[in-house]
Length: 497
Image 1 (cartoon, rainbow, N blue to C red):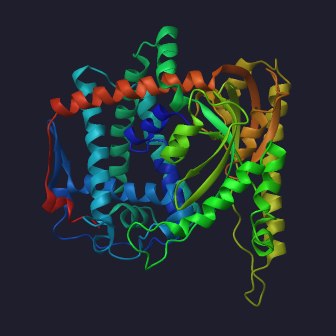
Image 2 (spheres, rainbow, N blue to C red):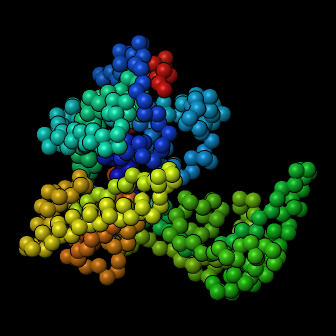
Image 3 (cartoon, rainbow, N blue to C red):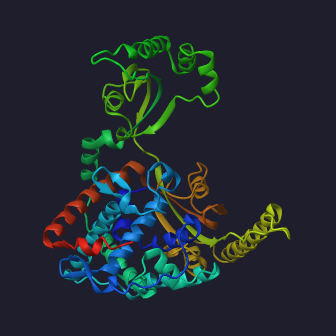
């Protein structure tokens, strides 16, 4: 959701994401070789890949960050990987990200940027005398320690997995060390963010200056596309005429929102209508200026725009019929919520004696496993209900029972879409009120015993704060970049695999 929260994840080198990526690497990506990898005689552990200020970063640590960048990328773009033109089963150095950069170079640069930012923060933290508490250290190490039991549950060798995922020079002790470093950068980052003083005058002033980027629009649109002939003569744009005429005819026929579909269909053939009718939709809402092409954005976000305005604009290989509906700010209130998470896990597939996957038996086993976790969730909820049923007692129980790491199970200033869909639907139910509780199941995690605390600042208010924080932080990082020199050694970095 928030830009500063996204920044936190990158600064921390995926502090809270490391374990998630490990699990995703093992369970979702499904292409990593699990056999142990023989250590190179010329170990990356004994060479320096980078220097940031007074810190020397070994080839092994750089290789870890390089592979972590790949895992993060694969998780973030899992649904569209086939369209990105990169095959992770082949040499990344021979596949081009751009005309001048290979995919290997792309991930090397990602690792350089991540390590540079992390060590800028570590350097600044040390100079300021900022240290992790013992609880913060324990939390970072505990997260890594839990890796052992997770891999063991799936029959995966610890060191074999680490080496095949993070490089042949990686060791479990390294991950623990990196986690401590990540925790220091992460907590110092949060300390810096918390030190930025933002008052209401700053928020309102920022909003007025940047309202085009903060507000959203709702509108209808339909494109009448044209095809550029292969042998078109320079200056000849007659191939656009038919599409333009249809768009203008449709525009003239539109009198209100209800007339839009008929106006557009009147310009299409029966075959064209048949192809699109089932999924036909022209309405878009909550659209930011940056997400549409420049000419369309300038029209939609013109300060004089009012409901019912309509026009035709050429963009992206066609003529768009546009009908303006509304412009608004994200004024819904964010939410504070506590939860106690009891995770569910997938059961092993069950096969018949003939070796055929038994769908029904596997589904029944999964239902039984889920029911067992649900029964535990009910027992925890009943334990709370048997007490004073306060938010404080719920928080204490969350610290004791929850499989999530959030202190007291608390998430504050939650925005729409930030949580899993089922979680999100429950907390943003219009009937929700402070003190509500329920067990909610999410496909991604398991059973959540929910406790609704109440609402917080409006979403737009939060976005402004986060934008100001991000701008201040970026300026701070720029200052640290000047203060702490970064030196890279290409011959070492290029040895990563």
